[in-house]
Length: 128
Length: 128
Length: 128
Length: 128
Image (cartoon, rainbow over all chains, first blue to last red; front, side):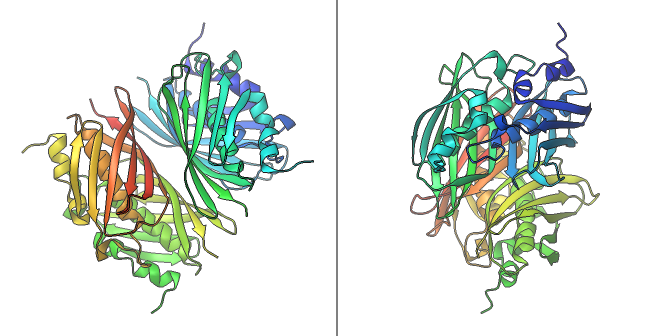
């Protein structure tokens, strides 16, 4: 079995359940995509906050594990800015800062029109 | 169609997809439960962060909407404290504070042994 | 007495005690500056986290009140990224998003070399 | 010179400037106090957010360093819940969780009447 950080991200079952696709990943950067379907909605017909968070968090995991060293999410702060429109959402994760043991990422979630739907700041612990 | 806040929480499709059950809800309080299955795991075999967040966020939504006034999540900060053990997780949401327009909740996520797996602080906007 | 939001920011006594100067403020944007002195240090000789937060928070208050409508900070998440170097720090606040009642800002704190020392995400309630 | 974590907290110059007193500190717990004066107010006459944060952060630093291993604040999320009343504020820091390298604290800030004015969740990195 391949337990490399990259494989770990690919084998993420909850991301699969949610329907997230990883479009691009390199050390410090990742782009993920979600085609919005009925199953992602809350009772008001909007994309559920947990689905938005899961998309952002997956992009963070992909970007922070891509260098090949397992990185665990410690905490995250997410702000919901605008209800996403259209049938597609994307999350782009960028490393803001990294030390030997810790890394901080910003993840922007956008809707089909490119409008910012949510922003997340996430911190990871690098397991050297 | 019943568009009351309570129904809205019950009709949450992403919570259904995730498999979350609402055990108890009253104004300012809710308890939700997740039976952990293969589909909730990340590539390392742990419960995925997005699944934990979704459970916590759903308890928050249930508690904050139970009074009958639609309440939208504005932002949330979640800390992952310990990998959850066992086959069941719970999230308990409690109102910390509320004004006319804003409310703040703390949500504790525990594993089958009652160990604290994550704590979330969430803020809602009350749409009067 | 002039109780306009602008005057309110200028009359901030804790910002004065800290020694913060407001360099620029327009609706949705502000730039503040702190000359680092002995009094801002913690016991290890680094700029204290509270001083960094106060600088960032003041830039946020200046930017969000500049439009003339009182705006109260609801919550904030700050990440400390790197110990600031040199004798001067700056905080730049930019509006990320605003609705009728709520606004979200990102505030970047930089040291004398322009290195990012801290990033803050702050949410305000607009008291119309 | 005594560079122990305890001395470091005692030698905090920004806490001194602010006027914070440390009432109690033991590993995983601390209680700090601030007598509210003119200098702590913002332009509206309320205690400034930076002063509230500084009080909470100092209690966190005292509690997390008391065991004798230097602990650095990584990030913090603070929610302002209610304008504090009276002439005294307190901050009580309690460890929520700790691993070998990371710790998470909750800090409650109360006013003279015991009302919760702010709650902070803070994460530290333990420099072993």
